[in-house]
Length: 104
Image 1 (cartoon, rainbow, N blue to C red):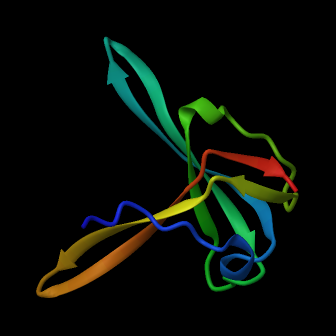
Image 2: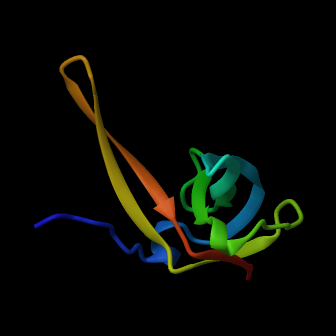
């Protein structure tokens, strides 16, 4: 059985989310033109306080414009895991995906 993603309990895992700014835009050349595949955004969490939360949205969600520290909610959030190794040690990178971000 393959683990495709985990659906988090948003309130317990992240609490209240606030917009912290734009992240990266992933683009790829298709048929000679640059095409946007996804966009990432940084969020503040009152539960996960050590680091900002990075969420990746598909291109279909469009570009998002919020004021700094606007309260936001994620639509259909899910977490995937990506494993990698450095030397003899294994590590896991957890990636948060959502279909959209809306004002709370």
